[in-house]
Picture (cartoon, rainbow, N blue to C red):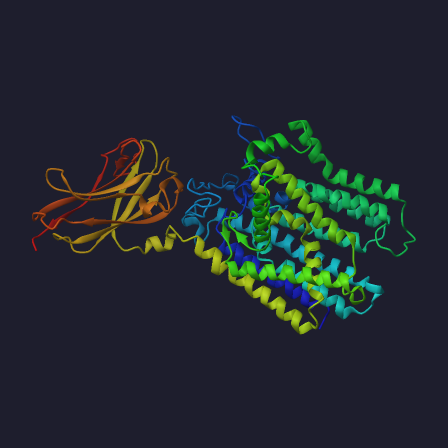
Length: 602
């Protein structure tokens, strides 16, 4: 078998899992993804970089416009094929969503357009996610290369088998980290930064201090600097590499330390320095911190509180492995136990390695420890700047390759033989494949119907539109009654709504059974779908089925009773206008008489 075949298989399976996570995860249900996607659509629509500003001024891309642009530029082709008017996305937020403790995990609304078949804008968003997936695949490859280069330095061991095994395990720890797969299935800049960090680690480990390698490190460092500001953590490692001279072997083409420092900083400055100059000109500081703090400062992190540290580190550990959604969708406790045991076994392996150095199974490299340490220090500084929102495992992904190699080396003390290594890799892959169906998909039940399901919905056709004057509103297109209307019976009224536009409030529906004197004899007043999909989240094209129950009094006299349906605002008592056609200037009433029920005696 070709030596690269296992790595190709890992990358292929990783990309397949990314497609699954992409399809299962609703749009916008990842940390800051609505802002990241809005950045991509803005670049495609406006052809310029976004500008941030403080209220009452409106930023071009609220929430994400402070980020450097490289990841979004690479994802932009996914939106360029759309007509200019469609290079945007109307994605209502869910006001009932909270980061922790809420009863709704969805941060944004998910309507009919997200159900198959997807419309052009949904396709564009999901295709933009593939840029992150490709960056994730590059992270796996560079992790394997770095691990392979590191293990080959073990006593200049030319034997490839042991090196391959450790490198493959390190690559698998990246490929089948569920959180990394999830992140690589979103529109984000984290996956690209992880790839560039892995590439730098490989070059730090394997490259002599020659002019081409020095220029290449400067180029990748510059690319990282225009991917995410946390790439600044790579800078001290790059400077230290220049000072230490790269790998230990002599290189006839090695350049002096001052020249290496000049090349790395000069090339990185040419590639990425312009962004920080722009920030200085626009905001008065190279990082644009003031504009950032306006949008992102959250609950402060109590740095002197031991309980705060315990909670923060627990969250960091869990979200490094498997905490989905907006950090509010944890994996089962047994899953965390598995990953905790992996870390414990790796730590025990390193302890044994230090006690019995003659049983060394991995070569040591100072960047392996320095890179995770710098990433953690960046998380701490971010927490001091922005608060508790900083404690997210993805913040450690710039050091993901180094962390994976450290874990693989620790586990390698206990793992002997290719069969056991492959068994562990298959187990990790199986767990990563189960989580989207076992955790993510069930958390987001569908609240709307696909267009095809709406066409097949059984009921009586009608046209009852409700809205404020001059607005398209929402239309009842079909209805039906389940049950027999008689005294003492309970019937169910099912309505098929079709949104024509965004709604400006969370209207409630009233369903009234009234007699000839307009007296209500039975009623059901509540939000459509009991508030699980409030009307302020509806967008044009949504199909929503809503059901209402009427308990007919046992002593109701026989006769004809009208079934009234309408919308009302419980905060003001105001009813929406009813229209029986598309004329937005000519309301007909404040309710529709859906039908007349004839109630007979028992």
